[in-house]
Image (cartoon, rainbow, N blue to C red; front, top):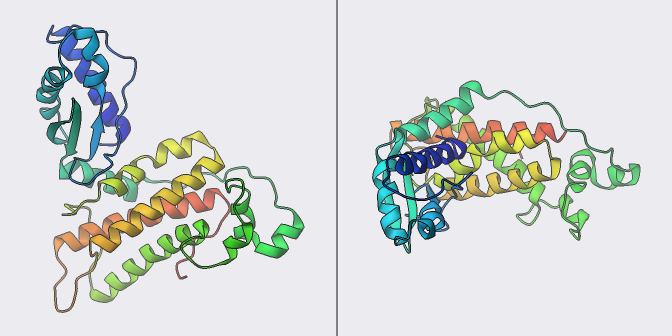
Length: 272
């Protein structure tokens, strides 16, 4: 279930509660779902109960409980919790996460290149083609010479390093005799999955600078996740289903990073 799918599910849930006269309120034209700022608060959160509580004349927590019961029964949703004054924290089933990874691996097609202006010759000579093209998408005030340095403060390096890291994991897994297979990841991968799920929407916008920031967020989420959740077996440990599932997530991330870089006319190295 992507964020767009979940948004439609939440909106449909509000509409059905109103039609059943469980809530007396105007159905909003749109709702939002976001990744919670802290781990352990579900995969996504929505403030829809707070938004419509005023219309109902009831406390937001009561409105949230009505919606919670309905949302918890929807396919792909494992649990819904009420937090604070009436936020709904939604945890997806492992099946929904598995389907997202499988869809990215099986059905993901490379998007066509985005039109970018040609970098000035002096910039090409100073930075090289990849860094020169990325520099056209950098926020104002960024020192372009930073793009030549292989360190964390270089956003292009972080994105390309994350892609190279995904390829290294695949190579090491082959050496250990196992391949990726979407499944239960057994770890907090919600921030990474949320950025991955957002990729089709960002790509559809056809906005190069927006795509560059999206790739930076994806690289950051991926590197944080790999640091917290070991993808490969350690020591004498045998490859398990969780290792295959995590490898599938790493492979899907690598495909999305490569797709984004290729749209920008930038190479996606397998080694860095």
